[in-house]
Image 1 (cartoon, rainbow, N blue to C red):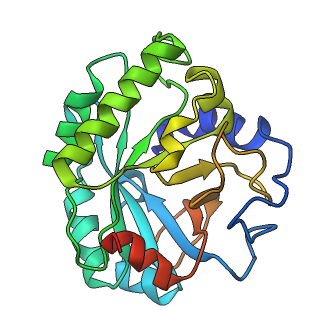
Image 2: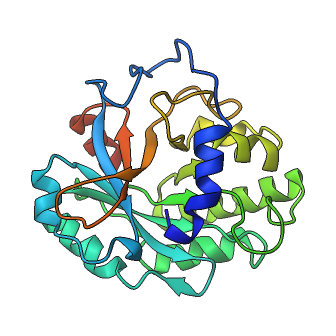
Length: 250
């Protein structure tokens, strides 16, 4: 998502999940061009000024927009992107880059909810996403946490976000990171939509226990009218009607 993390995530998303998913419920796609999916993007300040009307006219129907990181950083372009995407007709949601080694999950969920990650049933606001991936800073791949410690941190975040907003957060991750850092934890997938990162023509193996994917980030080098330079491209696993249903919790 943030350009400073592209090199780490390219190794994770492109190279470490190599087995194709076979016959998983609701996964109707064999590759990015499959017709049952809805196109979207995710952006942060690294995309600069975005013409959201051009983005929507290019066929993009949803976007995840970076809001926060840790407990002190708010993306300087978030407010502009969040408002302008809404008025362009793009279904949008905020995302939070997790820093599990600097504060509790509850603290970071509260920071997100207070700085753009709130929710309303307006047909264009998705539940926010928790971005869980390899640590790009010091402190180790899994932020120095044990698998049980990471599970506790994530659960703390998810519980607090649901308490604040009434919604189950989306979880963004790679299969390799999730299985290693949470010890192949399966419980969250009962309620929390999976946003899987794998930069390839197939989704590949999903995190342990995930029955299907809801969002798929399939490249970091996409192009879209209205955005200068590369942008992450994504698919929603269904049509726009079902995406609006997720947005409205119906």
